[in-house]
Image 1 (cartoon, rainbow, N blue to C red):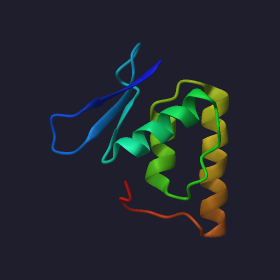
Image 2 (image 1 turned 90 degrees about the horizontal axis):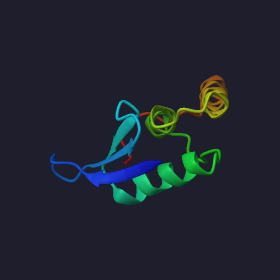
Image 3 (image 1 turned 30 degrees about the horizontal axis):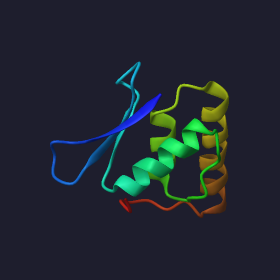
Image 4 (image 1 turned 135 degrees about the vertical axis):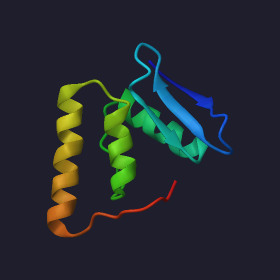
Length: 89
């Protein structure tokens, strides 16, 4: 189960697995944290081309098959030159 909590660092949110906190990521917007949580919970492929956001999906996930889908998406975007880098959330 994934939960969201406010970080003690200014304007950051932490999305984490309640069973294993090593599966966590930091987000600057609550909306983004909710999108990641919903995508991972429902095993949906994210529409984003942002590398950091895709890696965040992998960090909070513990399903090997879903991780492979995200890795394949990252490789596909890198090979097409469409992968965005940087902080957008």
